[in-house]
Structures are given as structure tokens and as C-alpha cells.
Length: 170
Image (cartoon, rainbow, N blue to C red; front, side, top):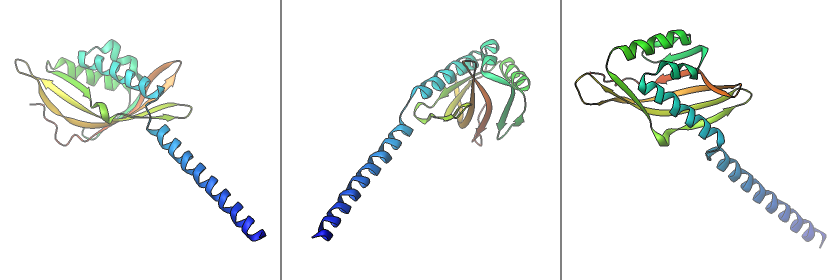
């Protein structure tokens, strides 16, 4: 009889702990995939940054970067300051062909970086319009932005841009 009670007790404990573990695992999965406040803050910052990019608005554009920016580009190499990135941006805008960037909506992932900010991982499409021509797709590329949150502002400190093997700007 005592063995039966002990067996029933052990089965009850095992059943409760298994149910708790499954619920905890499900909650963690839902939390990591859900779109939280951080996701929408970064999505908004990304949208505002690239609205400035699309308009070639250097004043608005430069508000989104730290001075010691590091920009890793698979074709262009490493840029190690925002001053260099801004010069490159101004040169691109001065060429006279319009470049437009568009985030691929369902590709956006945002994760917190404790005591620093967030990392944004996504895919974006670029389009270009040469003088006197209609807009054409340039390509679809991948990127990672490391966002620093400081003094209530979101600024990009690191960029990794890759997947440019089929870039078309002609």
C-alpha cells in the first residue's frame, strides 16, 4: 500500500512538473516572437532614417548615427566613421540618380542588447532612377544594424550590409 501511494505521488509530481515546463517553454517562445514596444521603436527609427535617405536629406540622416560608426559592406569594405559615411552619402546623392530604399516588411527582426540598445536584422529592396528613365529595381539585400539607445535617442553604431552579389544600377 505505501508503494502505491508513493508511486501515485511521484506520478502526480512528474505530471505537474511536465505541464509547468511545457507552459514555460511555450511562454518563452511566444515572448521571443512577439512584436513588442522595442520592435515598434526600432521600426519607426528605421522608417524615419530611410525616409531621410530616400530624400537625400543629410540634416535628418545624420541624426541617426554615432560619430564612431563602423559600416561593414561586402562590396565596399569597412567605413570607420560617420564623417566618411556622410561624405559617401552626399556623393551618392550628387550623382543625380535617385535611390530609394524599402524595407521588406515581414523580414524585420529586433532583439534587445542589455544596457546598450537593440539589434535590427532585416532585408530591404533598393530601387534607382537614372535621369530621364523610369525607376528600376537595384536588388534585394540583407543588413544588420546595431542601435545604441542613449539620452532617449536611437542611433546606429554598427552596420553590416551584405548580399550585394547581384547589384544592378544601370
